[in-house]
Amino acid sequence: MLNEEDGWGDLFYSVDKWNPKLRPGYRLTWLQCWGIPLVAWDMHHIKQIVSGIGEVVDADDSVEERRKLDVARILIKTPWKGE
Image (cartoon, rainbow, N blue to C red; front, side, top):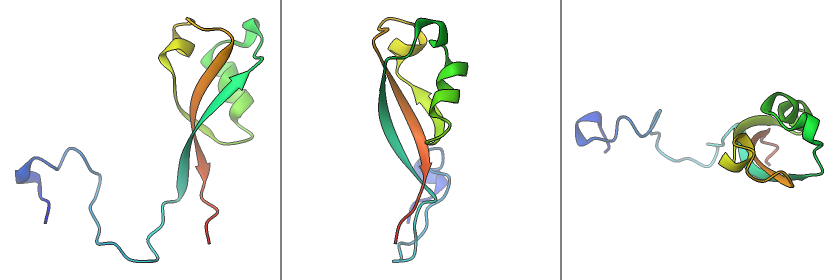
């Protein structure tokens, strides 16, 4: 069993025994967004663009530092619609 004394405590929020009904409430997915106008190339506008699909979790460093302005790689959290 994992415990904090073994150094695992800071890596996990919780550790639960697996069971068939254990499901995450969301999925994480990387999106590539093409065609974003330069005037909208900031996280505020990108969050608005992606809000219809999911919640922005993170963005590629090249998006935040404006190194590549042709495509934005965005990590989003979408609701789980499993079985």
